[in-house]
Figure 1: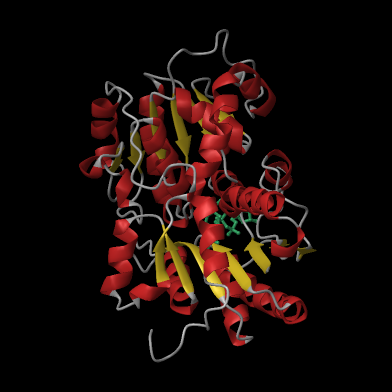
Figure 2: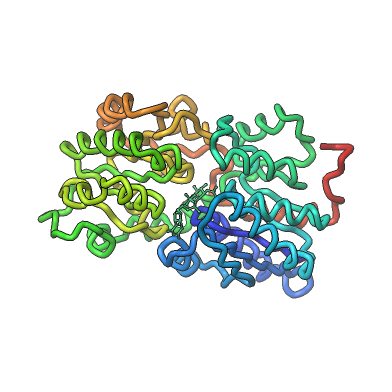
Length: 392
Ligand code: UD1
């Protein structure tokens, strides 16, 4: 069986690593005849060393069979160029499955290219819905699911979303959360990690801002366009974080999109000069986990980090109005709270969250075995015909 996985961004690399390991484990156990050939296409949406190569190296991903080097650009460019470049590769390779992970521009481009060539698509992390059509990721999720022949879901919440859209249940399999496979695999190393050294290596602030590494701190990440692309919103968030930083040091690994906006809006220098807000380069996977494990509170607009916080027990404040990952919310047993629009709730919820104990929570199937279930599903359904128009 031949499987092609298409990746483009940092979260894709994290989700593809356990899949590759599970395929290797299958190959080692089954021998030559039942071998799965696994090829990776990297669209190159994320291309900086610490957004891409670092992840390939530390997570043990195979060198991409095809690197498209598409890079930055408007959504139309990113999706259109990926579609054009992926099509001839899929035509030549004719895999049994094209696996797409998550909700990024590479996911929709590869699903579309594959279906037009009558190839079968499996979507890992299917069925997530924020119900917020202003998010480019929501459009990618819905369209990718519409095209996929196999919808591999993280939980019952996702299954219900697909059922509500009239998806044929025969196409859906609950496999769990593949990101948690990666977490389980690297947790011990993250526990042992020298976090002070990570800080020294990755810090962007010039001055030696701390005499002693703080025993308690807040972790902040921010990259969603609705938080960082508008000057007034970004300014308001930075001001609220400034108040929190009077109480606890805030470690802030800065996404390139966010750094660009901070610079453009004249906010970067002020932050860099402030000792209690510690700007860091984008961190590696294990480094991020090491900070998340020790943070008093995580403030984020990332989907993956909020899932990891739930499994690790880190109280988490989500700088968003909606989430496509309701398993992570406190009312569903998780550790996260949605803050809604603006920063009004941020300080109030921060004061409530800072005293909370860590209560780790693992939803069903978030057990580190998801990739093995994905491989089993791909093998079992290999001979099934593609999704037909009769049964949507
Ligand atoms: C993308 C995903 C988002 C995911 C996020 C994780 C889509 C629609 N969005 O958003 O779902 O949560 O990745 O990080 O696919 N840049 C660099 N170096 C890099 C990568 C990007 O400088 O290695 C810059 C780009 O030039 C651009 C900005 O960062 O200005 C944003 O990149 P973009 O490709 O638009 O996606 P993300 O915002 O990262």
